[in-house]
Image (cartoon, rainbow, N blue to C red; front, side, top):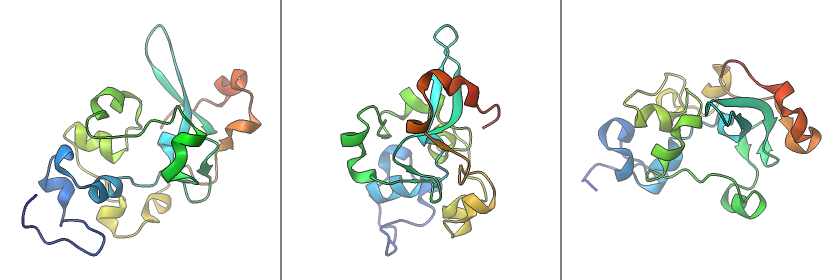
Length: 156
């Protein structure tokens, strides 16, 4: 840690530009999430090529209007296969994160988009920029898994 001032949310100024991912506090790590909900979409992976395809089928815990997990703190109890993203596991899972994901962008040396809440100052900017899944997902319990291929999203 440095002597950077910390705001009321426990965040250092522009921490994402000044500190490597593995040196972030837990509050800073969580603040990197832009709230798009894309990582909560079910994905299909081609066993031969390793290609990952996003579907519009959402995890049963995703709130389609807020694009946040309805049981975030206890999600592993309800969805044991849910991936808990951590700095030490990011390199192993970054390949299936959406291209707009802050964790993936920073991991690969990129920058946050202007619509990211840390840049814009408002959590709704991700929705205003039309880069979230707000309002267009289907709950996984409504679509049989064998039909998920019919709901692949071409460009995410």
